[in-house]
Length: 125
Image (cartoon, rainbow, N blue to C red; front, side, top):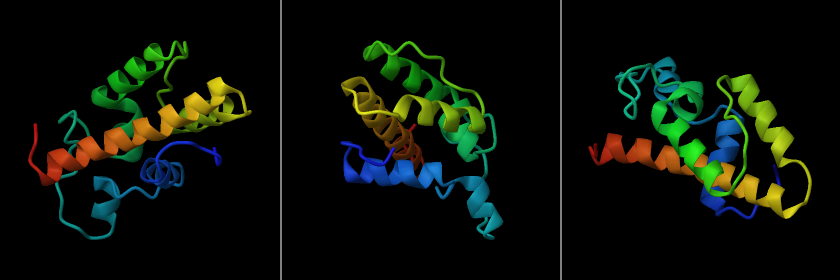
């Protein structure tokens, strides 16, 4: 996953995600921050990294649309472990398809994170 042509902020957000360092609601609550732990995108589950980027309907639709757009016929994983394996499996190599996959992955993660933050801080629905 290291050589990636995605924008630096998207790549950094993906790095945070892969290392489980994104400041999701469950992590903020563990740090003592009083916060509503409900996912602002789906409004029906606790916001964890797994929910936000894999299980949330917003994220699932985004992944399906992005990978359909590039004709990448792969089932988006449903668990954190599967997501990591899937990312590693499809992110290996130097082919153009692999490079596109890595860009889409980084930009997709960044897109979900930006939308989440927009709904929290700009109160966008």
